[in-house]
Image (cartoon, rainbow, N blue to C red):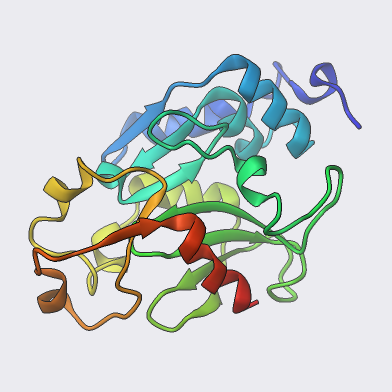
Length: 215
């Protein structure tokens, strides 16, 4: 097990790269405050140097909300996104501390989509990001690594990616959604269905089981 001293790389810090993508970000984002003790614990469990953007985000943030909270990037956990990356993965992608699972959940969205780094279980392209698409209930490769995924989250065309899912009042609704909740309608039947004022939200802890069963 590497120590915090081993893991914190101040000379080559991945957070600087992430901030460069944020500087002129095309998409709305919010950096959630970290709890230093919790950040240290999550970094130790992750066992990746902070010169990597994934570890830098875990060490520097409680998470990042993208596009008014539609997309949630996991960090070390915060009030608005009370799920540290390794805390969230335990019991889902790995069972015991020190184990390496076949993939790592790194982000999710409000419609029940999950993003993961492939470590061999999702396909042969290790290190690539996969997306569990709610309209197909299957994992699909996005053909990019973590760094490109974060850059895309901040600067990519999210409206195009989610064009079949966003409803007219989605921005207003995001203000009242907890970072651990997802929209309960698992199907994709166009915007009309999503206009309903009867939208229901459920715990992502309940919904993620469907994504895990699809592996």
